[in-house]
Length: 122
Image 1 (spheres, rainbow, N blue to C red):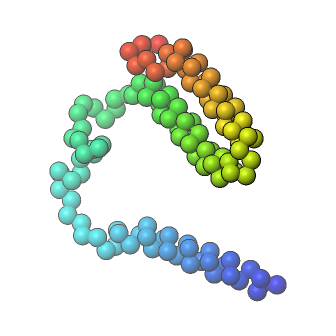
Image 2 (cartoon, rainbow, N blue to C red; image 1 turned 90 degrees about the vertical axis):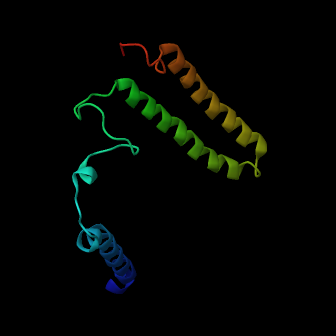
Image 3 (cartoon, helix red, strand yellow; image 1 turned 180 degrees about the vertical axis):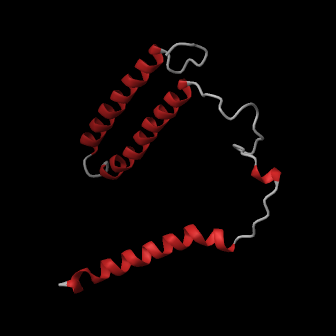
């Protein structure tokens, strides 16, 4: 009975070993020459300005979540594209309904002012 699971167990052990090796090998093999210049935090290649305890506006996170939602929309378009040649009328109807629901949500967000970065209230 163990023979049926042997392939999966071997694959799991190999995968875990490679994962652990890739996590810990740089700490063991890489040269370590820390300097003050290398130890400062940076984002996008820019030196930090101001305090590290600075708070970001909630609008930043809202726009990030909206980007994720509309990015998922594109990911859901691929199955639609593959099904389109089999039944074009049904696939086009699904596309129109899906896109119209997202368009209604986008219009709602525009009207509520989510994309207005100058406002001070949520």
